[in-house]
Image (tube, rainbow, N blue to C red; front, side, top):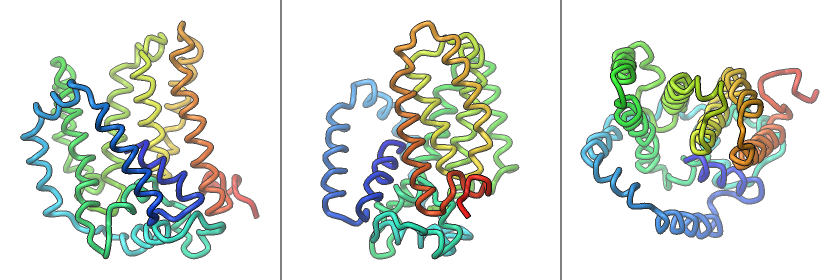
Length: 275
């Protein structure tokens, strides 16, 4: 999800997403990814096939969402048909809040048929339940915590109700996974014992939080805390080269995109905006 969405953002800087060159290049990238799937990946797929089939029924109850027509679908329509526009937010101020979720969604619907977007949104629910099953099922404490998360779902129904255009559910799910994974590994973070895979995963999760919804910037202190101990405590500095490079690349692209659209480095923080 992260890398395809990032590719969409980069491509749209120069060309609209509804473009034959985009679809050919994306197909090649997906083909390379599929042929490099490991046996472990296929095993996980087979072990969770029943869960995948059950969750695939969610699109049947999905709705567009309360502000789908206000700016989510119009935003996707524009990036499908036009490259990145200078001052894009002058058309609709809410375009300044454009989510990376919209870039992935924009390539999945045609002729006002949003079925594949519904399945894309469903992937986030699948990720949540797979996370609860695999990670939180490792021991009694984690299992108890996972059970408590399920019990609290009615309290945050706005951030979980199935919708194929709103970003609330994807943002809420990624936030839960990020906070849970971070705090269950807090000792490894403080002591610089995180392995490369964990560092990359947390970097991607934090990047998604910030780019799915602008309020994700509230997670920035936690992110800075993570990278502070990463640089200070890690004995093997080479394991942070790739995630740091990925972070810098993503941040540069996302900030540049936001600046071109709204004239702000971090919309809606006024001090970062040009008059």
